[in-house]
Length: 108
Image (tube, rainbow, N blue to C red; front, side, top):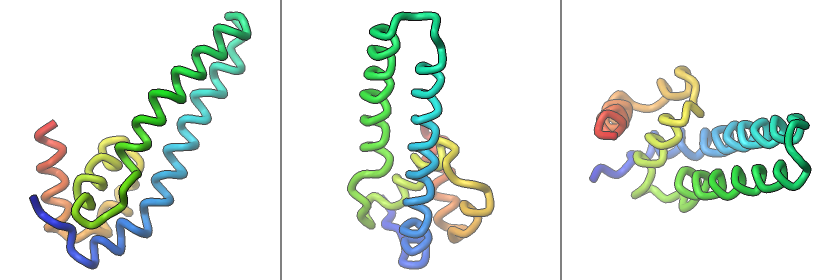
């Protein structure tokens, strides 16, 4: 597997907290929808929120934990696949890194 090059690593380290914030905003919006939907009981809404947080906690761990260079390109691919990077942010990576990431995403 390819290791992320230093300039791309610097981009990832800058984008990582931005993508994490976007992910968390998305999860909080999901929870907010459940809270605002008064069709079920409070307990049903609680269980729904509990399920969302459990699933999303696993997602956040896969996408954002263990920020290390050997995982860099795979991490960017996962973040990209979740739509957490803008085109402008993605274009800040080297052509080589973008090519590898596109290849990784096409395998899924």
